[in-house]
Image (cartoon, rainbow, N blue to C red; front, side):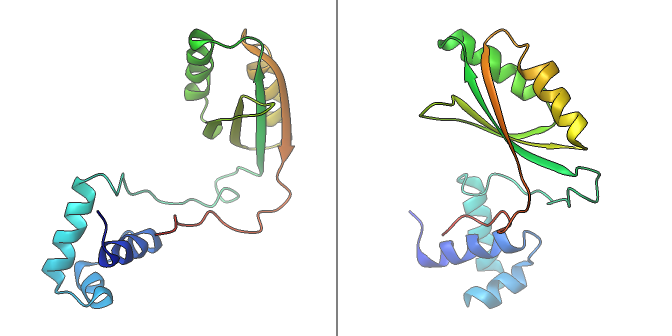
Amino acid sequence: MLDSTDKRLLAALQRNAHVTAQDLGDHLNLSPSQAGRRRQRLEAEGYVTGYTARLDPMKVGLTVQAFVQVQLATHGPEQARNFARLVATRPEVISAWTLTGEADYLLRVYCADLRDLNRLIHEVLLPHAVVARVQSQIVMDQVKPDAPLPT
């Protein structure tokens, strides 16, 4: 069970994964060793699943972000596995969710340009045996950046 200090520690880690034990201790009113032990415990218990760097998509040449809804032609465990394998192989797909409602999947994709998005849709997704329909929405602007989870 998380106490309020654990929650504050997790919030601090989401803001800056490189925060030192000294700074964590200062922020949490703990000694650096106590803060470090709490951090290690939360990591060991799986509350922290990893540390990553957030890249600027534009600076790495990814100028188009889109959300792609995919509807499968038939539903079943094998079709779902086949589609999941396809999604897992595509670096443009940075996240994917199964959904309730009309679409079966929602994919968040980044592409270098509209030509690459068109190629992903028309040469990869639509020809796949289990895909019936694809609908895309191109992101015009992101009004709120990806935020930390509420703690």
